[in-house]
Image (cartoon, rainbow, N blue to C red):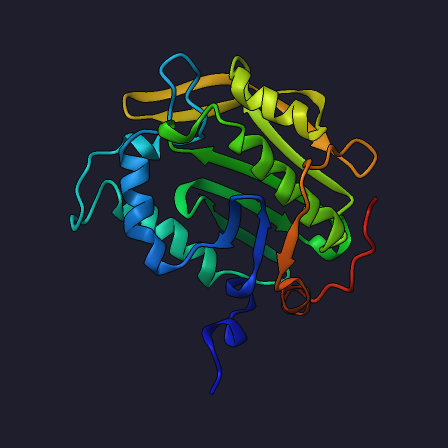
Amino acid sequence: MLTLEDVFPPFALRIACGDVELRVLRDDDLPELVELAHAGIQSPDLPMPFLRAWHEEPWGPGEPDGFPTTSLRWWWTQRATFAPEEWRLALTVRRDGVLAGMQDLHALDFARSRTVDTGSWLGRAHQGRGTGTLVRQLVVGFALDELGAQRCESGYVVGNHASAAVSRKTGYTEEGRRRIVQHLRDGEREVDEQRVAVTPATFVRPAGPVRVEGAAALRRFLAIGHATPSG
C-alpha cells in the first residue's frame, strides 16, 4: 500500500544536525504551530520582520477571519501549488522534539535559475540560543549539496541585528538595499530591506555532522538531476 510520502515526496524529507530537525509541515503540526506563533514571534526591540503582520492578526481559532484561519490558507496553498516550476518547502524547526519555528525555502524556475530564497522565524522562547543560525546553515547546505543550487538569497529589514547575525554566520554577503512596503494592522509602512546572498564559495557549514533523508525522491519530484556536493 502506498504511503503519504510515496504520493507527496516532500513529506519524506528530513534534515537534522544534533538535536535540531527540519521536516515539511504536516497538518498534525498545525495546532502546535498556531500556539507557538500566538505566544509571540517578534522581539519588542527589533523591527517587524514580515511583509504582512500576520502574527498580529486578531486571535480567533475556528473563526472565518483573522489568525489562524488566514495563515492556514497560506500554508495549505503552498502544498496545493507545489510544482517544479515554483515550489516552497515550509519546514518545521524542532529542537529536542519541541517545535521552535519555521524555515522556508522558495524557488522559481529552479531548473534554470539554480537559485532559492530563504526565510525563517522562531518563537520568542526559542530565540537567542543559536537555533536560527544552525537552521539556516542546514537549509542552505541542503539547497547547495542536495538540490544543486548555486545561490541562496534572503533579506531582512534594516535594523534587525538578529537576522543580520544569522546571515553573516551562514556566509551571506550584502547585495544592496531596496525599499519595501510592510502591511501592518494600522496601515502600511515603507522600510529598507537589506538583500543578502550566499554561494558555495562563501557558505559557512555547521560544526556537527548533517543527516539528510528523502533527498533523492524530492529531486525526482522537482524534476532536477542529482546534485554534486558543493564542498
